[in-house]
Structures are given as C-alpha cells and as structure tokens.
Image (cartoon, helix red, strand yellow):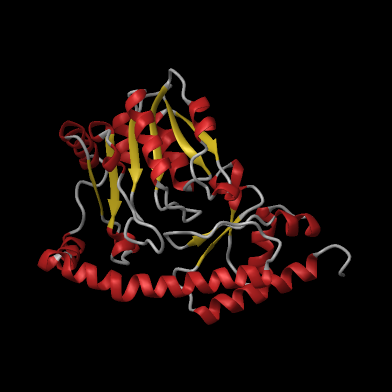
Length: 300
C-alpha cells in the first residue's frame, strides 16, 4: 500500500477512503503529502457506500479512491451496487481506484467480486497478501497487479524500501500454490472458512446475549465485529479509548477503540474472532459484561 500510494499521489492531492476504514492507511497517505478525505458510513446501512456523501467528497484535487472489501474493521463485503458505483466514479472522474483485497478469500456470505468486474481496469491497482489466505501474517509477503506501466513504477519504488521478500517465505508460498492452487483451496474450504464461521456465529450470539443495546452489522467477511457501544459508554462516563484501556487493565480483554478507524468509529470498538475458540469468546464477553456492570453509574 505504501509504495502504491507513493507512486500515484503527489503533495496536495486528495484520496477518498470510507469512514471507518483500516487505521493503517492514515500514515502512508500523510507521507505522500496528500490529504485523506473520509466519507462517512454506518452500521445502519451495513457500512456500504453512502453514494450522495461520496459524490460530495470528490473535488478537483481528488486523485484516487482506496477501499478494502471485505473491510477492516467492519467485515463489510461491498455489494454489487457499491462496487459498480465506485468503478463508475473512478471512470467518470479519471481517478485511480486502489483496492485492498487482503481478505478476498475470507468470505462467509455473498461472493467476493473484484472491482475489475465492473470496469476501470486501466485505473485500478489491486493489493493482495498471503497473510490472511495462508494464515502467515508474520511473514509479510504481498503482491499487487494493475496496468503494466504503473506496476513497473511501483516495483521500482519497492526495490528502494525492502528490495525483495526473503527466500524462505517465497518457498512457503510456492508450496501453498502448488498443483494449481489445490493446497490453497483445500486449506481455505476445509480449515479456514469453517473455523472462522463457527467463531463468527459465536461472537454474533454473544453480542446479542451480552450486549443487547449495541448497534452492529453482521460481517460477511474478514474476522471482525464493530459494535456501537455508545449506550454503554454513556452510562459508564467513558469514551472508547478509556473503555479499552480499563477493560484490558481490569479484565485482561483486548478491544480496539473505534475512533482509530475514523470519526464514524467514535463510540465503537473492534472485536476479532480470528484466534480464539468459541469458549474463549464467550468468556471474553462475560468479562466485558462484568466490567460494564461494575462501572455503570448507579450500580456502585
């Protein structure tokens, strides 16, 4: 993402992202000298694209649009309407469309469709990774594709940052992709998706059971829930950062404050079911409930 942004953006340009969106986009954008313009969305519309607000965000300085589908922190898989709208905007306004497809294989309901399906191929750069697909986030190996000339330019900048991935991880990925991707398909279909789906369903059940006043949308992909906790935070006299810090200190439960993902995330928290068993997920929610009851005004 960093080398792609460095290639496409100049100081003074504007790039549009959804609000909320992945917190890791903020600093790479700043380093280009460009300005991030975030378009608000909400759980009430499933964190899909608000088309009218998006149109209002486009200016003469707009150079690019950047999205992830499925998304982090919401798990939103953009529907056909949202994806077609984004590609139409890219074509109509001569904008780059940067798609972060890191979770493209982690889909539970619906179908992942690359934006190229709707057009704008010559204006689209797609960034991918084996981190989630092969469950090797620590090895940090990614790939990207797009128009030939742009890929060449991005590759030149990449050589100035880390030159090339380590040989060990390249061998690992080659093994993962052997036999026309058979190992990859079997691993995803027999291990990854069934495991994550059970955990997602358990977290969904726990939110309804333990946090009935939280507003949320059910993720179609990735491995996050992004509940609106403002009803509870108000009773405790806390914001989402104070809540996350105190919850970790007192109950040893980790959540990520929503405001780190954009203004629309204020009062939310990101929860992940990626590495915990169903039993641990339930235990975590019991601890969250205990914490909220202890700190709610009027309960001691």
